[in-house]
Length: 271
DNA sequence: AATGGCACCAACCGCCGCCAC
DNA sequence: AGTGGCGGCGGTTGGTGCCAT
Image 1 (cartoon, helix red, strand yellow):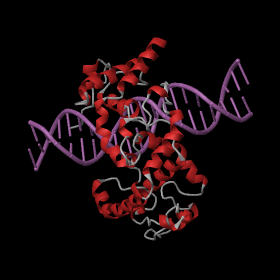
Image 2: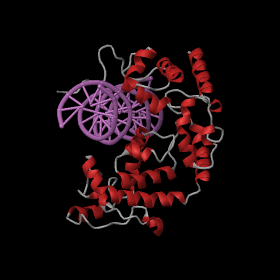
Image 3: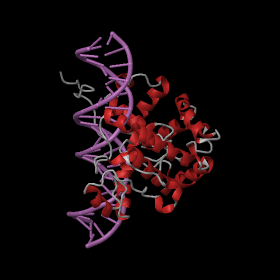
């Protein structure tokens, strides 16, 4: 028996979201929270499927999203995490509070891939492209230095299990993932150890400096002064990134929604 | 000014895993 | 144990804006 579609596609609106739809969705979640995505469009009066609402919320409307381009430091982190986790974008995104998996995936596909190619590295394996030729000739179990190891010895992370089929990034099934889990966990642990040596407070403040100017960069702009900055936001008042991550659930307390709502009202009046 | 190519990104599609029944 | 529904994920596509010609 085939799967039922996630929604009745007849009468379901598709394509870009309008500000009015955004407003409806935000108001609904603001007042009701998120219980069941399937019921959200019906109850909020949207002609969208639940999945579409979920995606719009996660990728665009969530109040904790960090807008703006990726810094070079973030790109480097993405590259390292990708070498450990492969195309598991949601896992990678958990290391970047305020960034979505979709955003990271898009950035990888449009920018980082090119950047690595320009550096003569294979985007999937992070190995020098010439080395890949040897690799394809049967040296599949050989270990290679991490692509960034030229910067310093402390970044020497062996990438053994990632490329067990040479060119594909990651095994697809959970079973295969389990086979490699131990090695990945070890390597992820190594990476996280390295990350923990970075002063996260300064990292956050650097992020704030580099991205604040383009806090909202998508189809419409919000006045950044009315949007809680990293420094002002209660989400960031803790001492550590981890504390911030732990507080993510408090986002649904909506303490910071009023300014955003004001922006929507402003935009509506402007139209 | 027109247009073709390219880059970027929001959104969709289809599959998978989990969970309730 | 089997089945169906739902949420989540990753791959892909289509629209839009920018830039060079």
